[in-house]
Image 1 (cartoon, helix red, strand yellow):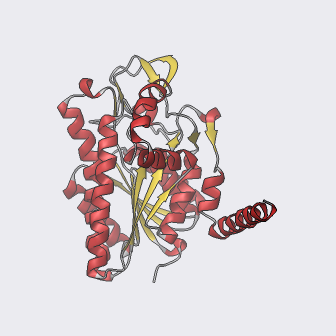
Image 2 (cartoon, rainbow, N blue to C red):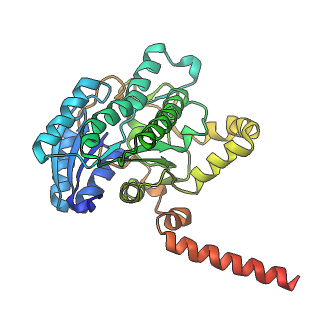
Image 3 (cartoon, one colour):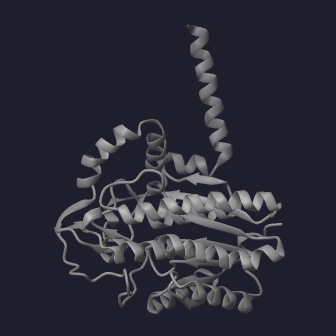
Amino acid sequence: MTRPIGEQIVVVTGASSGVGRAVARAFGRRGARVGLLARNREALDAAREEIRTAGGEALVCPVDIADAEAVERAAAEVAAHWGRIDTWVNCAMATVFAPVFETTPEEFRRVTEVTYLGYVHGTLAALRWMLPRDEGTIVQVGSALAYRSIPLQGAYCAAKHAIVGFTDSLRSELIHEGSPVRLTAVHLPAINTPQSLRQRNKMRRQQQPAPPMFAPETIAETIVWAAEHAPREMLIGRPTVQAVWGQKLVPGLLDRYLARAAWDAQFVDEPNRQHRRDILFATLPGDPGAHGPYRDREHGPDLQIRLRTHPRAAAVVAAAAAVGALALIRRG
């Protein structure tokens, strides 16, 4: 039986900034004890204090998620400290913002090791503690880009696609074994996180998440909901739904549309001043927090998010729509 969030031991990878930071805080506000995994010790310490202030408890585990043995040790540390692991949220990522032909093999390898293999390492570590107990939930934080790639994000999109394949295989294996361990995939829209200022950007202009972009806290609350209810897969936000279904229905049309629209939409009219200061191979000092530089452009939950996380409300809306359609048919 799944414990209430307030009684859970939760591990969050990528907990030092962005969505992972907001997710860790969201669990902490619910009273969970949270293991914080990322490379930036300074940011993890700040996250721990936020969780303590919110009423939770946190354990800092500095780790490079690309290092499988280090992830296993961190999982063992969390389990030794609190006795078990109930929920594991894979959220760590790295990316290179550049055309494919300007991205080096070393950069592709590093993005793959963090953004894809990091999820594999985290999942394996979680399973070692969950399978013997026949209990636990693993949340794979994915992206609309796992289904519909865009220009200038080739390494990241490929890694997110790989996570979907890995997760679907694992899900079938768990079903085959009759395991009660739950596995859910949550795919995100654009979010205002520090990624835009800390990723490796090889372009002349500063990058932004292609609008509309959501607030990290909005997404974090939805991820906590997914951890509670464990849907097979969850698309968050109208843009994500549009991207996934557009890819299914008109992929060729999207190729041409995104070649134009998704290129310019990822830039702001400011020069790129990062000058190779990025977190691809080593972290940067300081605490980046959860938010990026575009706070004035953030959105809260849209109608799709509200309905997706409130099934009863969605059922009422669907019933009302059906009644309205029936009335129109009768009038006709």
